[in-house]
Image 1 (cartoon, rainbow, N blue to C red):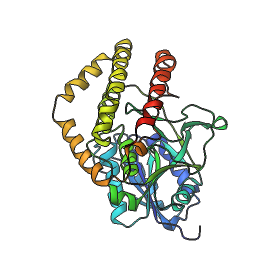
Image 2: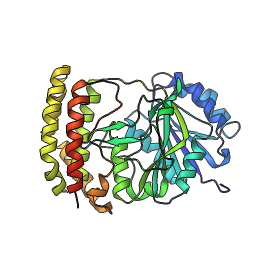
Image 3: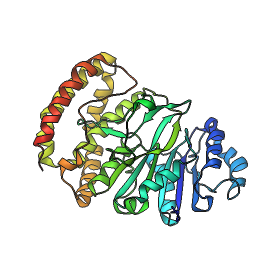
Length: 360
């Protein structure tokens, strides 16, 4: 590639002081031309002092052994709002691509160049997912792309599998790209918009991936754009609550009314199974809180806003939108015999039949 598009890395590093030395070391080794790249660092008023260390040790290296460094330190308002700060800066400065890098994620030497190469292959590619492996085990996959369950759950494909056991075609389409390590085409973001700030976290990247898809763009995987994530699964009440809320918000915002009615019986059956699993795990209060929140106007206003935007962008059918969706939840950190032996086979079998009937 003779001409290298201008690319900005957006690095949100709230509470990531311990990761900073290795992250910065990975920036030094990038094979992308330093004069075509800027790193926008967003400490988000992190309480661990990472902003002070960046200003003292990293910022003086800007434009020298590191690419240009820009620091924007605004208060922590969540993944969507804080990343949007960096994204807006990059759009205003005329960059061609923006790359989101999690605070606990290292970049391989060719991570940016390989992602940009895939993006440049087709102007209809809106998002390029890097192959994400584990920080302490580079031969173990964290995600090879986001999967969307028919009930709206987003999850990481191939999580926990050995890299040698995973077969992925470089540049192949995925349902959506994880916000941990993704390259976005700026022209696509200008058309569809940035992260929806109605989401604090969870499913925000899924929603943007569906928005790109519905507008006619593709989400793809770059297998040679490798990254290493210090990922640790953490189960919290807020995590479960946001997932339960946001998955239905996305379904109701993006699917046509006839599709919602068509899938409602399946969703009802899945919901019954979900209540059973929440009771069994002792997290029933999360479901009850989600029900209470659904009685407030906030989620309905968000759904209405998203529906208007989605319909204004729509260029494809629901059949095309859902073609990569699945009826199975696989490769997750919490083994569940009911899910694996009963729910997955039954739901996926039904979904495969329903998908063929989804002709609009």
